[in-house]
Image 1 (tube, rainbow, N blue to C red):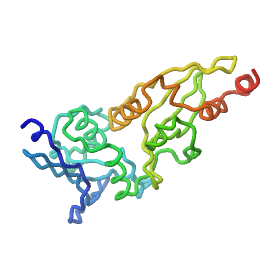
Image 2 (cartoon, rainbow, N blue to C red):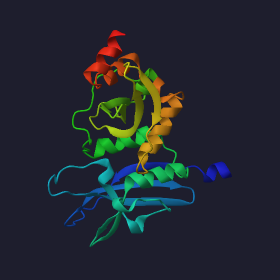
Image 3 (cartoon, rainbow, N blue to C red):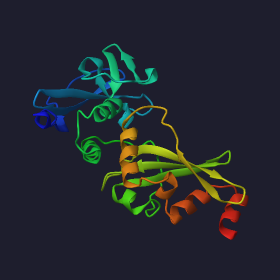
Image 4 (cartoon, one colour):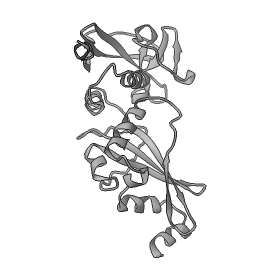
Amino acid sequence: METTLNLTIGPFFTDSGLAQQMTGRIVPLNLNIEWANPLKATRIPLFRERFSYAPDRIRFENILFHRHDLPCDIECQEHRILDTVHGLFLPLDILLAQLYRNREISRPIFQLLDELAAVVPLTSPVTNPISTKGLLATEAEGAGFRLTMAFHEAGMVYAHIGWQPDCRTTRFHVGVVALQARASGEMVPGGWIDQRDTGICQVLVKELQHLVPDSPATLLTERGMQVLAATLPKTHHEAAFHR
């Protein structure tokens, strides 16, 4: 009986069938997210935040739903709550993360995000992500994870990891791995940088850690480490390749 009650279909994204009209910062996507179990069916209309300087830009973190459609308790940072004349709007990103934590939905996160990228023209926050393959472990890249960017600051090298659906340009942020750069050019394995905000990135990090369960340093291949080394100042860079 318990297995039957825990069976969940979805979530899926569906056309709302209505051309809702709103003005100002909130724009309807004319899209719903829906899921159901034997006890309840849930349908939530989705919106996006519109910015005057980029009115056509849609980023994942700016997809919203109305507070009155909230199906469960969530923790949401105040700066991510949008207070408008139409009421309070909350990020879909945070809701999905909570539903996965509560095990209220079980559809593979990769399928869900791939479907969203297929129906919404999402814009990635990184304008020129690294496109070279072979920088992460085979298991990780096979699942769609990519090294997005890398930079050096105050003796540390930071590797930004993303996830990208097949045949799509959208890249979702996953997390940041930090490595310490020594004067010798050696990079000492560090760990994942704590996420400032809750969200779907935490679900993706868990999926990645399942694929590559060892130290975050093992996530990067030799070629990946060379890309990180190239971000170091010249003295570090030469040491890394001529020791």
